[in-house]
Image (tube, rainbow, N blue to C red; front, side):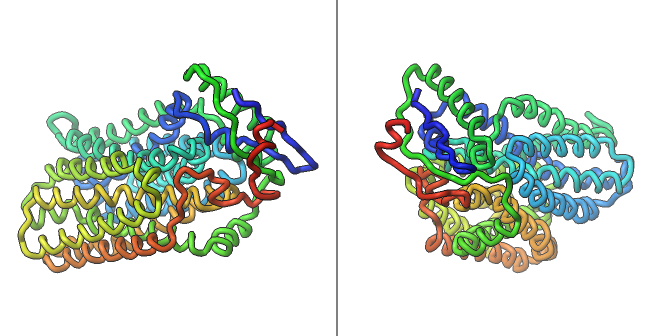
Length: 498
């Protein structure tokens, strides 16, 4: 095992090689535990959103146990879920930077589990809507706590592909939610007032399984050494190194650099804001462009997905779940198959190309739709191709904002850009696309497609000029921590373990 650099302290100043030691680790069972414990929450989010969208019709029927309309479920219910996700991301994002990743990703999962369980036993509309808000509150907090922890624990060589695949796993949940809703809506199997409750109960079961694994996920050593827990960070990394060396049967190479930082307990909110928007305006513009572009593209396609199929192609409402499962599969395959290229070909080329390609392909789909050249099967195939690239691009938006800002601002930056993107997609998007996709007028739906495609292409062009070449680079090299007392040191001093 490589010899760790002892903490060289002077008051609250410490020199450490923890980031370099984490980044030079080979892929191991320990990393799989991180991925499973933290990454699988996106499956829950996809399950949640898809289930509610697909069972809205059943909840509005007599005998469902709730006196609500489908419009209230997809309108008020969706808006409250989005509001909860935005506020949860900002609230828990601030706490994550202040009190640590591990404490918060345990709390946010607990909030999600409790709220989902309470949703399953809803007896009144106000109860249902309250816990839809709180479910979103927990999920929003998960995005900030989890993305920051993953990027800080995964080696730089694999960070891009792992982050993309994890964010893309949302669509595995969407596939499950689509197929599960078909089963839940079958009244020959479950009574009308029971089936929809069981779908939420399944989310609780999956969350409990994730909680069991997550108990073993450690705090981020990067957060620890900045916030006055340098000894704990060194001990944790040393334990991981011993575990990896035993698994691989060989000693690890010496780490390549050290960094000297001034330890601090917390970072003020205004310091974070000034850093993100004052010191890194180009990166902030990039983050906003990527999030807003993907939010509008996804709403252009998915918000009126069922209405488009039923209105223009005569698909029955009970069968739309099968079509959605197909495009969800296309969404997951994008990050899965393209993720590695973000670490090898590079961030700038892959981010810009996935955004531009998906936008141009959606323009092509709009043209074919306007000509009347598509049916339910071929329009779904077109959406699959568009979303294959769009999903990789959308996942890279989360990767980008989680790695291009300083360590101390990471969770809050993720929370802010996620909140902006979610608000654009969940509030502005429906206002723009609802009437367009449900009007039954071909030109209106074509306009919806073109709006989403235009914003996606615009974001891709922004990425051409502003994307950061962050592939296989240490987080501290991409953005120097605010607490840094100098540039990272490399060479003989590190090799000697001094």
